[in-house]
Image 1: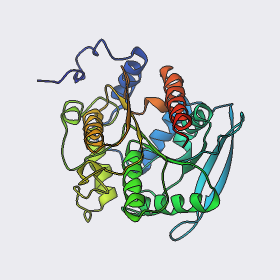
Image 2: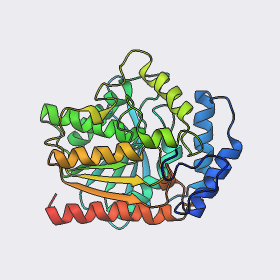
Image 3: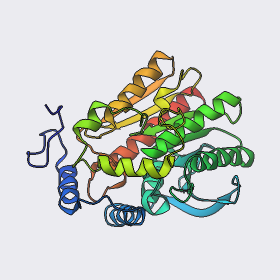
Length: 319
């Protein structure tokens, strides 16, 4: 039996699904091939979608910079609100299954997030698999975090969506365990939290819900390279022994996302371990919707909601 929201290709979309999101899914299903796309095609498809369905934010300026990396300089794009800054900075780790994504796919969203939060957002171009498998992306995130703390004083937020949310959780754990590079807040958007187990939402939305199960498996094959076990907490952060000591978390989930259940499980673990949690479920939404405002108009309001809640929390708590 399919769980609620787990419609197959031949069924009518569930009534709660946003009609614009339903249209995106219908187009993705129509274009789906039986073959799993290779990495080059995966990257090109995501970038093509972003070029059609994302939009730049006029309320920010942006600049491309480099940060000191573990082996070579790391590229980053910095989004600065035109209305002025709070002195808060955000390190943003993009989604894309650890094999795709970057400035071409997340610049619009990071601009909107910067404008809404008042933070200066650093979108990091971390190394991708299969050219650089795990732990290269995490090592780059660690280096970027250290570089930002050396460059600036004041509050620092770590944020990420999807696979970038996995990295954001692993990076926060790394910083906590070493008692260095303090992180004021953690912003997670539809994070992947457990690749060692198959949650119900991933089983029920294995195909036709924007993120295909066979594509996820292919991404993991490239990312882990047959070496790193899936139950490593740096890869499946839900399997950490404890989240005690983590900074307050802003967790945003999409109702019709294959990763919804593991996001909910993360929220339960955070609460159980005493971590302040601000949880939002974006009703009717699908994975990656936040980057598709031209196709799914509610993406604009969602980015504003994410940024404003973060800003209000920081101001209320003097962070």
